[in-house]
Amino acid sequence: MWAAVVIIATVAATLVPHSGASGTNDNADSSADELQRKKRSEWVYTFPVSGPNVFYPRDHLDYPAVDLTGCRQLVRAPISGVIHDVRDLDKWDSKVDESGTRGGLTITLHGDDFVRYYFSHLGRLIIKKGQRVASGQKIATVGASGNARVTLCHLHFGVSRICPMSEQNVRRGEIWPQPYLDAWKQGVNKSPNREVQRLTKQTPAACIEAAAAQRRGGDS
Image (cartoon, rainbow, N blue to C red; front, side, top):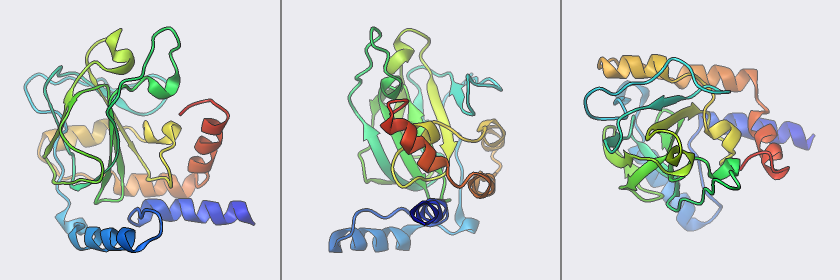
């Protein structure tokens, strides 16, 4: 019975805005965010890396995501929303190579389209947790933090459902971003919302399974 309740809550988290812990201030913040949240017809998408000669391959190692070139170029919010998580300390150690620290400096954006966007291996961070951003707003620079120190400077970009927490196995990427990047680069307002909703309905327990793996030490 409890598992069913958690699954329902997980699905709802993708379709409705994220709310924090209970309390007057949190409710006020949630209400204020609702007033600012864009309607579907107002969703505007921006290619997330500004500058010339940005390259991104059609594949990614092990799971759907994309690595974009453009070292030290600006990273921009692909859509308006709220910055939900920020990791501003690079704890990755090559001798230990813990999976949860490989991303180095990271940002998680909960978009107004009810989709989560994850950025890692960042350089300079320009925003703060809890900050509302507009589509195209500068949020960071492409860097070489985490295990990008021993590979190439790049931006890891992941698109996923919004989970109750920040389960890394989901947050790092669930659907292929390339078709959306292709569209945004051409100025086409193509949204990943419907694909994320379909995936959530097909695999409603993904957030729970990722959280369980995190508790076992499989990822964090």
